[in-house]
Image (cartoon, rainbow, N blue to C red; front, side, top):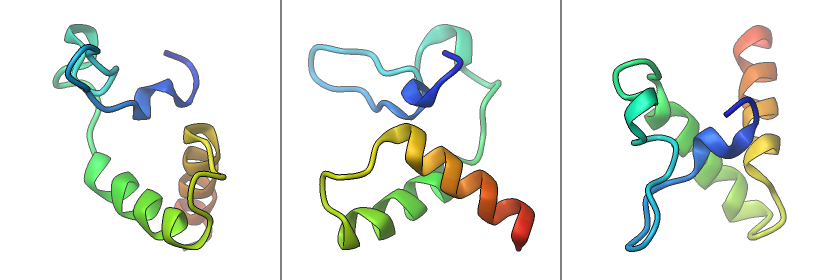
Length: 64
């Protein structure tokens, strides 16, 4: 996808885009993004979207 849906994890009934066949071996760094997501979710549980997490990650990777 061209949006935050790349952040979706698998569930029992859904294959998320992280593990979808077209994305295998082409996307990396999810452990960093997942750590950022966990930190933000602790402060703002349920209020932050996948697109928000990607925006924060992109901003911080440039600023850092």
